[in-house]
Length: 222
Image (cartoon, rainbow, N blue to C red):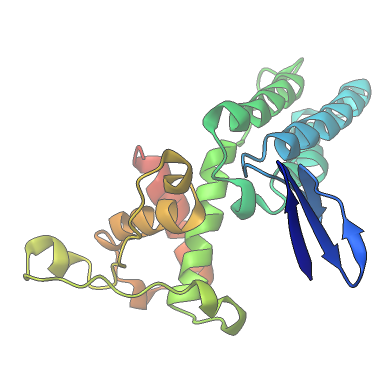
């Protein structure tokens, strides 16, 4: 590979062929932009989901509330959560676009079925459950292909009540920018350490841990 710079332009040649710079690239269905904001990816998700919402509205008269909710979860919400741990650290103003999509779906589900009590957790809640469950697989189950993401245990200079309550706590990555603080390692290490003060991780299987996380997040404002 040869990299040349002429004035303000950078030219990259690989095997004798020139490679053009791109502001965005799609990898396995996820769009990465040069600033790692994921704005384009989230807008793409919302646009595709909106088209599905329109289809749901057209056939909503054929279904009751439970049927509409099941169809939304299977065909629309699942697409809004694809690869969410890679882009879940995006700015809240972008993530709120997806929340608006779910709110539209909620109105369709509850339309003409006021007696139906839906069970739609917020998208951020579901992303947090997925993130903490992934941490469990990394730290507790030691899944082989995830060990590159494994974090060291917290090193305590002094034994304090907080340290004794959370022996499975992890060393929190140091970060000074809001962008990095929203990323997977930083956000979910903090959540993990808070959770470890409330449970003994050794007593849980993957499914029971996931249920515990779901309940804990609903009862705690993060």
